[in-house]
Length: 142
Image (tube, rainbow, N blue to C red):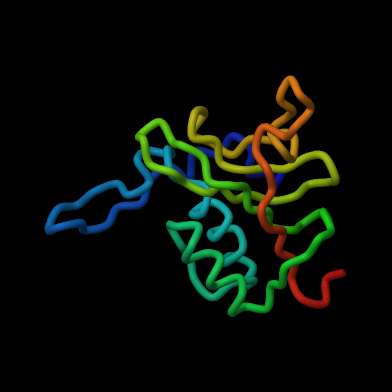
């Protein structure tokens, strides 16, 4: 399902009432990573409900039996460090592990799910471009 979602525009928009006005809280795919992951997991009843934020998704993962792991395994949910967003806000990022070196997450620049290196590649000094902060696996999965 994760690989089949590559390039899908389905996760770009989610409208909610904010301060009395209808607003696209995902900003046309600019902030869609948590919604993307949550919708796929919720479809298979692996979490309780959909989420639009990484924090809400993480709480649901923990309540739904997902546990922290130090192993990068296919199907795991991976969280990357917070990073300055083009809006000036800082945001964490979330996606799925495909294999030891590959992940899929919703790209804010392409506005669709994309496949990429698990650390988004390396800097000139060999350090990861974006460090992994947490890996979650469904308890009993390993």
